[in-house]
Image (cartoon, rainbow, N blue to C red; front, side, top):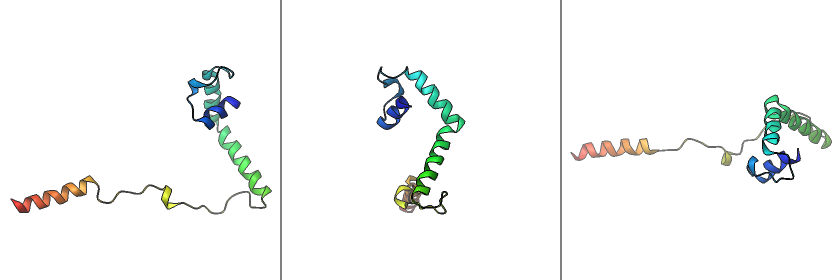
Length: 94
């Protein structure tokens, strides 16, 4: 667990684990198995419930907020729009 947290917290490559930890392939294989089995999601869910109940809140959130600054939207007037406008202008010149 410490090796997995080291990689995730530090943003380092699996191959750059210090020699104090088990071989990187071993650590990665455990991480991958646990992720595929849903273990990490289950741990996160259980911790969220405990924290919310400790704060006197409902265990399951009843609403969510999306911050528009973090949501990508479609671009206005991409290169296709510019190209079309330019073509129609060029046709009038000829």
